[in-house]
Length: 184
Image (tube, rainbow, N blue to C red; front, top):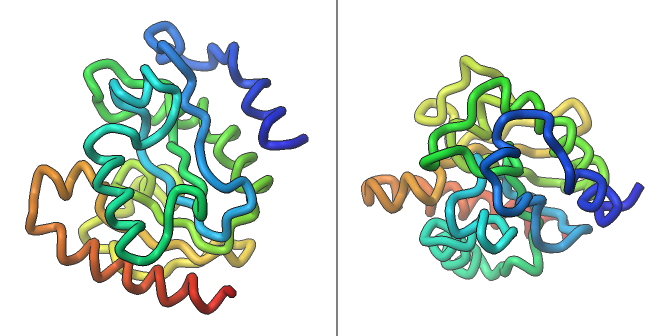
C-alpha cells in the first residue's frame, strides 16, 4: 500500500467521535520519503479547514524553526497523533489517539524516517508511554525498536504561549540538525 492509498482509505474514517465534527481529515504533508518526520498532537481550526497539518500560527513558527536548520516542509514529513480536530482544540483523549494510531504507525512504516521529532507531550505520551513527561525528556535522544532516532521537544504552540521555551527548542533542533546531517 502506498501513502496515497492510505490517505484515500481513511477518508471515511469513523473510528472515534472526532469524525463527527471534522471538516477535513488531516492526514499528513511533506516529503513521503523524508528522513525526518515531525509528529504533533492533532489538527486545529486552520488545519481542519485546509486539510493540512501545521498551517496556523504554530505551523508558521515550525516553518521558521525548520528554516533555521536549513530545512523546509518539502524536506520533512509532518503528521499528527489524531487526524481529526478535537473540539475547541482540546487534547485528544487516549481512546481517540488509540483509534488513530494504526494510521500513524502505517505512515511511519511507509515513510521510513530515520529521525522522528515528537512535538509536545501528546505525541510523546502516545508514542513512548503515558508516564513520559516532555519537561523531563525533551532534548534527549530515544531510539525505537526499529532503530529510528526519536527526539521529543516542546510543541510550537507551547513556545508561542511561553517564550521561555524558545531556547530549549532551539537547542533541540540544533541536535536534530546535527543528526540529520550525519544521515546524508
